[in-house]
Amino acid sequence: MTADLATAPQLPFWKRKSLEDMSAGEWESLCDGCGRCCLVKLQDEDTEAIAYTDIGCQLLDDFGCRCRDYPNRQAQVPDCVRLTPEVVRTLEWLPPSCGYRLVAEGRDLYWWHHLVSGDRETVHAAGVSVRGRVAALEDELPLEDFVDHMVRWPLRLPKGAASRQRKGEAGRPRRPARG
Ligand code: SF4
Ligand code: SF4
Picture 1 (spheres, helix red, strand yellow):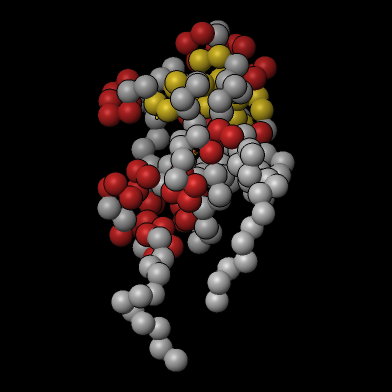
Picture 2: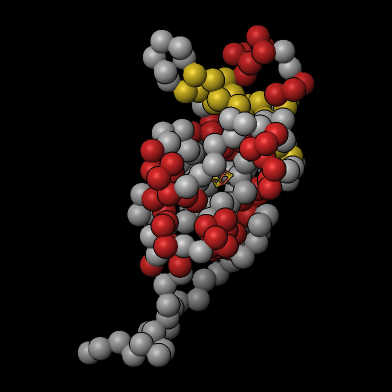
């Protein structure tokens, strides 16, 4: 039997396009708005290992979890890393929840991603974003205090987040799919 191409459901763009083939709008929409990558990271001089802190970049809106001047970010924060397909495939510190990392690894987006849920609040409801978890912004603390703010959670998925449904939906009965 052959599928009727006119009626076959089309796969979403992140499942059928490579990172390189995405339009600018599709590329930008892959960001789930978690804000994790906008936390300050420290690098060990000897081992070059990178550790996250719970200190936000000076431009991070720690409630909205967005950059406060995204179009001019690199003029204001020269070490802000501009993500490209090549950079995404080489950066080891991108969080495991990051939409770019997931797609680069051939994986699907999680339920909380706004492209799946249709709601930009679900990344916060799932506990994946940095909302409520940023101790300070980098211009609010002396540099010598940064080392006291090293944290591991940005490189982990919150417990249960991968399977948890959005608040209020957990007990909702599901309809069986129609064949
Ligand atoms: S970690 Fe990835 S998904 Fe989260 S804000 Fe950064 S680029 Fe977007
Ligand atoms: S400049 Fe903006 S995008 Fe870059 S790390 Fe800071 S808050 Fe994030």
